[in-house]
Image (cartoon, rainbow, N blue to C red; front, side, top):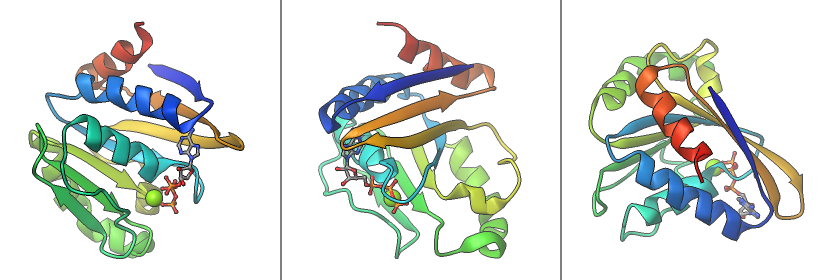
Length: 155
Ligand SMILES: Nc1ncnc2c1ncn2[C@@H]1O[C@H](COP(=O)(O)OP(=O)(O)OP(=O)(O)O)[C@@H](O)[C@H]1O
Ligand SMILES: [Mg+2]
């Protein structure tokens, strides 16, 4: 199941994030793909805000993980860029535990795991179009997570 949408402005991305936040209230594990500056962290920040996270959401590039507990669900935000391939393999079991809890977990640069993530997850691919326009593409195979993608499709 796949859903793709063009967000012409950051405000469009905000609306998408608000819709997404309403669909993940049972928890979800999300891996984000896309080049540097595509809009992965921007989306996480907007979803966290839509989940009523009060703290300022910043990129975890240098700390690997940021967590936020002031919203309606715990939000965990990983950025594995600095771990690279070998490091990512060592934390896959830890990531699996996050995927089993009732929280929303985002992982940037999960492609450093080299293989497919070995547990159920939603994939978001972000591509730069021009200026402030970005394409967000959502993909899921798992039955529970497909519901989220179907929810995005509905107006
Ligand atoms: N429509 C849009 N959607 C998302 N971000 C946008 C949009 N238009 C402009 N931007 C800007 O693009 C930038 C995206 O940067 P962001 O930090 O989210 O990238 P990233 O994919 O997380 O990169 P990195 O791999 O370095 O972590 C932000 O400054 C954001 O404000
Ligand atoms: Mg980022």
